[in-house]
Length: 553
Image (tube, rainbow, N blue to C red; front, side, top):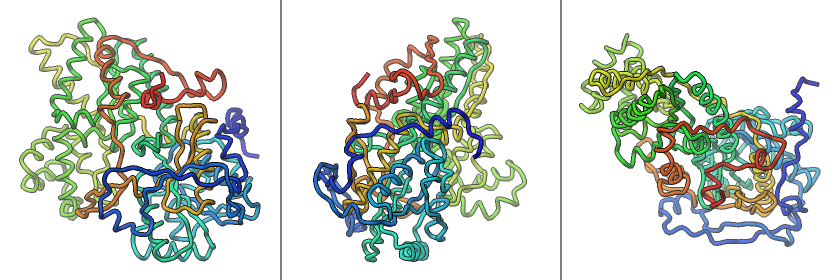
């Protein structure tokens, strides 16, 4: 037997807490239909999803559904980046399938959608599933970011589905992955391929949510982990009283992680990208704000502090957002000569006449090291890899320059010793919290009930998450009802809309009310590591975001 830690052994034995309804014989559970209200649905979405578009949300109730007990071949794949709890989704799905009919099979596709296209799979057994219960990571079958979009990919996927006699496919992923799930559900229906498609809401970034999806799985665990290590940094800097810690956090498209960590830790500064964009705050204004906090704390002899920065902040600040847009537009041409340009000076010279004056001025304003990162090689879609831009170091460099000017003008007399950190992938495969263990297991069993009731093109939902797990309400909503039309590569496409920080929502308003107090006082909170055993207020607590959104706490 492989070596495992005592904690891992204990987590294998943990029994997730879920609503009693999910534990009943599925033949005694039927759909309870609810009308899903949305004021406007773009006609292009209705037209593109003519076979699967509906406004019907569902939950479950006691009833009769003998079809639930027939043997099934169910496929599952993990799409996109990792998030704590994915293994429990698979475990919940596996248990529900086996309990409904021992002849049913769960087929796991390796490395995400590419496994479906290439026919790379394995039949998941109890031994395999038991070895990953309540553990972090996606290593049971691996994950990948391939999108099944081309006719060739779709035909290969259909061929694999037919060869395996697959009744249904569960796609565990974020907004892009579930957009792909919606497309596959529509294509299968149109081609009369008898394979249902069900999505699962996954992303630590927290940007896949709405009235029915109260949280994406992994967000709870990741923010607790980040808050723990940020708290340790805060305690360290309180002890030495000499460092300013700049922490970049995951969240390219939304600032939910930074906001949640701020609500937990109470840092001196936390930037919220959505607010910066709304205000149109310039890079210089953002730097001035941080310098103001630094200088005022120095007056009290506090030459230390904590700054939280969302990973995608450069896409919210007007100048850098515009620079990224123009560089992405010019990339195809730039890529042809990129390797022949020896240094940054040559790259700038080539770009000078190909960027607007404002965009080029922004590029020249950046420190050379950061400018090189803006001009680095791209992702497969030709876009800048924002996570590789060391924004925390960009801010440190610009703050140092600004403080030197302030010192020369007699506006600053403190000491500035900065430290830069990026907490990203460390939080993606953490052993899931009790909340995520329970939530993900419930999502897996919910996915099976959606399948057993004949639905396709739906995403599994679990609501009332602020209450004890026994009181959660499980069901599903149509994937198409989460969509809007966006321009992708110059073409309008229906995609699942990312959920950004609501500047009128309770979590942000709570933060906005307290941040000035946190800026100039040292009121850090130390959450400590994730607790799995002990008092409920320690091991079963939910995020501050969820508490505030659901008006608890």
